[in-house]
Structures are given as structure tokens and as C-alpha cells.
Image (cartoon, rainbow, N blue to C red):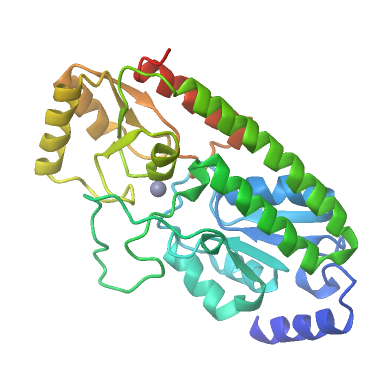
Length: 305
Ligand SMILES: [Zn+2]
């Protein structure tokens, strides 16, 4: 794969105007793009339109934090014209990019400085040093940050495929406008609420909470894999009772067990709040529709008027 990659780079240097290369799997002449997980695929497809072909490394409906890559996915990363990822979110993807795709990788964590991971989030247990350790990766749940990422992605596409640069920028402007409208809806709907605490199963909603002046109370840490300690669950239960929390949120791709138990304990109901880390296959949902569903759940749970 490395030899193929070097050959590809040489061809790209000689023929900068030709999008994609016959030898890299993009035989249809499209810009071949690998997206590391769903929200990045959403942006790549919307902005790329019909002149890119997008492959998603995370399978639909599978939690992407601790993604393991299959050999053919490693090959796809090595052969891509652009790889869109978020350093520190999926260590396996970081490793493959370092080996195979440094020059074509676009790290969306570089668009705006990441916030620190919320207090109470667990440490990584493997003892390895990862990129952006101690930082919160869930930037896509803030529509304003997400729009800025889209603008930068369009510039990356424009550089990789100058023949279609104007179309990439035009589609990015369209996505940006949709995200601005979404942000407006969130701001308006969450302006006046009886409560502002959201209890979530893992700490995915920090950026969203910061943008709309909510307080996230995560049961688990920054990754949904970690089991919360009994002490943490007790703390959250106490807080939930104190604040009169009516809803404990869990998510689509991880077990609702702890959230349901906690909800039963404090007399609240358990409800889905989707962190958009993947969408269920065949659901017909996309980033914008799920974000609007989430807004409905939030305004109901917080008694917003
Ligand atoms: Zn997450």
C-alpha cells in the first residue's frame, strides 16, 4: 500500500488538475474520500456531491469510539484522495493515518481548539498516549462548530480537486446555511426552560450544552465503553432528585441498562438523545433530522416554553 501511495502522490503532482487516479480505486474519476464516522460522512457527502465517492469507516449502527479497522479499510485509507477524521476520537484510525495517509488526512479537530473533557470522565485504561487526550471530541453536536468544519472541508476538497472547487464551496455554503438555521432553532427553543440539567449516558453533549447554556451531567465519561462507578451513579441520582430531573437520556448505540435503572430509581423516564456517532442502517435519518429530533426531546425534558 505504501508503494502504491507514493506512486499516487507522484501522479497527483504531475497532473494536479485530474481528480482521483485510476490506480486508487476511484476508477470512476471521482475524488475518493474516506470519512471516519457518520457526521464526517454527512459533511463529505453533502459538500462533495456527485464528484466524490465517500466511504465510511464506522459501520452503520455500530458505536465508533473504539473502532477496529479491517485490512480492506486500511487499504482504502491508504488509497484515498482525502481522509476526514478527528484525531483522538478513534485511536485505530489515528494509527492507520500516521502510517498510510498523513498527506491526505484532514483532522477536523484542528478547525477550532477542543474543549477539555468534562470532569468525571474516566482516564483511558490502556496507558497509551493518544492525540487530544483529556479533550472532548464531540464537536459535531454544536451546529456552529460543525458549520465551520464544513467550510474547511470544502477548501480541502477544492485543493484536492480544483476543477470542482466552486461547486464544493457552493454546497458548503448551503450546508452552512442549514446549520445556521438549526442553531437558530436550538437557541430559540432552549431560551426559556424550567430546568437546564441534562443527564446523559456518556459525556457526548459538552459542546451542545456549552452552546445553549445547558449543564451536562454524564453518567459515564467521554467514551461510552467505560462502566460508571457505583459512586458516580449515586452522585448523579442525588443531583437528579435535587434538580427535579424528569428524564434520563440514553443513546441508540449503547445499552440503555444503566440509564433505565437510574431513571427507575429517581422516578424519571428514560429517553433517547442521539449523540449522532452513527445512524442506524436504513433509518432514513440524517444529521439534520436527528438534531431536530434531539431538540424536541430536550425541550420536553426541560419544560421549555
Ligand atoms: Zn462519544
